[in-house]
Image 1 (spheres, rainbow, N blue to C red):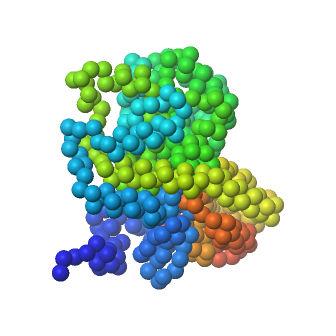
Image 2 (image 1 turned 120 degrees about the vertical axis):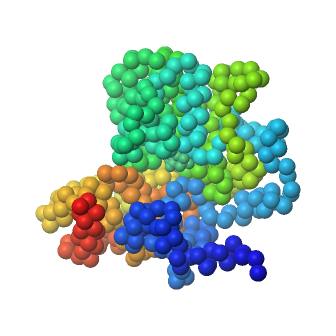
Image 3 (image 1 turned 135 degrees about the vertical axis):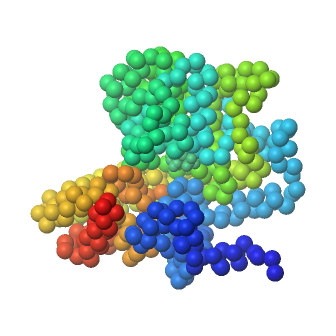
Length: 462
Ligand SMILES: Cc1ncc(COP(=O)(O)O)c(C=O)c1O
């Protein structure tokens, strides 16, 4: 009998962790086992996952933000089935693929006038790489300004505009000149531009690492400086785009902001097929492809594949027809209000940052002496340990999958699918409240777990 895909999945599942450890990533496998995240997931649908024991979980991570429309959305799934069954030519190479042309038309329709040319690729990092090259080609300048804590992908060009040293460490020198400006540091911004030779300023309208929201005035000033200095404003919507923040694109929250380049990826294909897109102005695009013999100057083999394009078209339809940006705004508001109601009772919570269904919960040093001691000890062991006291019990005790928002920060991030319901929000809020009650009781089981993880962390350093 021919092995079927479900057959291979089932046969391999019990030994997948071992195989993964052996052939893919031993450290990742070890980390998952250490924090108890080594579940065997067997099914996913909408915002839910099921483990091998048949237990249902609420997924508030969306596969790092690819499942804006939930897993297995019937409209997107059907578009893929139809594409496979239609026997389309796909990658005839010397062609102008109709599905890519249609998706480009749809994307540009969703964006402000003037953003009318699309370069398709396969990931967020590739979209960033494209932005760097297009900005250099268009301006004839080389310099790049990026923000502290910025994340635009991990290929070496994108790494040059990454604001987190933990990612860059060991790979310098990277593409240069690249200048880092801290978020909302107006003087730093002026200084960075005044150095001259700036091709681009790149930013996330909400930073994925830590869920930090730039001040509107800061982004407006960056846009003005770009105009003054002949640089391009590059808006990375890889995580924030396609309804996530309650608007189709998050830059729409800043009145009058007009990016020259917008980067899109992740949810564009509904989580099914790798995809990326860079949308820009005609004049910028024309400076990259200046003549017929320059037509291949920036390309990639797998960009514009029929499956990715069909999924993209279906995803945009779902986003609009199901009013998912509005739902993200409404349910996100319910979650924020629920969290804010809890804040007076739970002294570890210091701030909730929310736009739509991109939510960061920041924790800080508590006032009471016993909890302060626990906080200090945890941070002495590792600056990355504390948020585990939230995400581990949320998964173990309440079956809610969440993530730590970045290196060296006490922030937990929520990134659920945009079509979650009030009942899902209630599931999360109830689980989070119980988790906070446990966290605020010292000594207690959460702190025993922290002690155990702390020992692992110390042993791993030896
Ligand atoms: C804002 C942003 N830009 C770029 C990327 C890189 O995307 P990819 O992982 O598809 O390369 C990410 C990934 O998390 C992201 O959040």
